Image 1 (cartoon, rainbow, N blue to C red):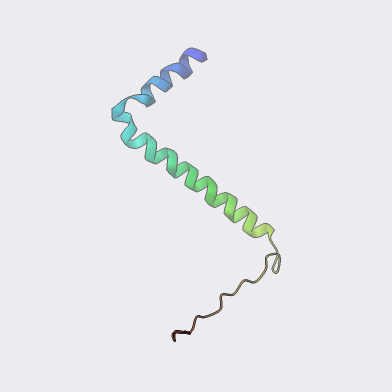
Image 2 (image 1 turned 180 degrees about the horizontal axis):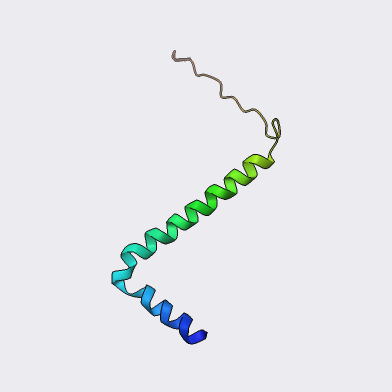
Length: 63
């Protein structure tokens, strides 16, 4: 088992494999984060978070 894992590590560390390994790694992380956001978005009920509104700035200078 340990020898097999070491072989995979060596294969994935080759520079030629880095072209597809790194983007695939980040794509998997993005999918996991999207599922987590969807899961927690479904768990929150309406009104759980405060309603934050930003006041509009006036265009005139107040000096």
